[in-house]
Structures are given as structure tokens and as C-alpha cells.
Length: 257
Image (cartoon, rainbow, N blue to C red):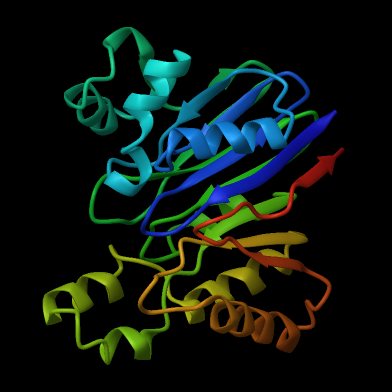
């Protein structure tokens, strides 16, 4: 027994992460076209119809949930803030399950934890068969014990949104938008992600997926290089590292206890 993990797509255009046990499938967020996600589920040989858990109410994480629920009838587990946002978008109340604290879907235990963002937002730790996967995207900082929540994970998906110099020099962004992105309630930079990756690796995390890269203020080679350099400098060069692209799946990670 164990868990399988795959990022189906990650970025400002849409986000969706697949986590599955032998009998349970969970999608973390659903901001990708339904046809595309259906194709991914088929390619992954998903063992069951998926439930959805939601991190927060921004459109790139929830915009396709109404269409997905209409087609598949999936249950959606979410905080009160997301509950209201999805209900206003037409998701029936009988498909929405408001969550507080830990909850169980099939044979996967889901443990939410708060992250710092400009709307109420959570990350998730998922447990099954002695395995643990943690997901934290859309966050501006990693303090307040957040990394300790994830430090005993077999695999972590974490935001690696931007290069700070690219944000500051971006002529298309207002100063207010730059301040938001760079703030503790904005998005995690490559440098901050690298420091987080070292902290996690030194506590046993061996697999890290870098997610939610900015289309304008980052690119995969830069993000991976920054995090890899930090890991290597700390002597953590054996960590498996992958960047989640916006337009295709990552590899499928199989975690066995």
C-alpha cells in the first residue's frame, strides 16, 4: 500500500494535483479544463472516481470545479470561504462538504494546515498506508511551523513562484502588484523555496516538486537551478527534484511504505 502523486498542471492558468491510494483518488484543486483532467485520469489508470479538496478560492484553483462536478458528481471538501465561493458559482450544496480539522476520504486521511496568503488558504498533508504527502502552494512565507508540518513527508509539493529581481523589474506589473507578490501574504520566491527545500531535506524529505511558477517572473530552469544550488550547498544533492509545468503532467511518483 502507499500513495501515488502527479501534478496534472500548475501555474497561474490552472492547478490540479492527483493523489491516489489503491482505492481512493483525490484531486487537490481543479482549475484545468475538464477534458484535459479526464485524459490525465485515464492515462494514470485512476482506480476510482475522484473527490476534490480545495486550498483556496482563487480562480486558477476552483474555476473548473463546477463543470467537473456537473459531469462527475464529485464531492468537494473545502473551508467555509471556499464553500461560499463554489456555491455562488453553481456547485450544489449537496456536493459541498465543509471541513474543519482532519477528515477522511476513503483510505486517505487529510490534514489541512493554514498558510499565509491574501485570502484564507490551506495546505494539505495526506496519509495512507504509512506514507505521507504534503502540498503547500500559494503562500508568501514558510514560518510559523509550516515546514515542521511537512518535514516528515515522503514527498512535498511546494510553491516556487518567482525570481525577486524579475518581479521588481517587470514593466507590466504595478508597484502595488509587485508589493503583493513579494509580501508575506503573496507568493514564495525561488530563494525562499530553496531555503525551505534545504530545511525539509535535512529532515528526511527525499522528493520535492516545485509548483505554481509565474509565467512572467520565472522559468523552469531558473527555479530548478536556484533550489538545486541550495540543496547541493547543504549537502542534500540526492533529493529528487522536478518542476511542475503548466501544460502537462509531471512524472507519476509512487510512494510505498
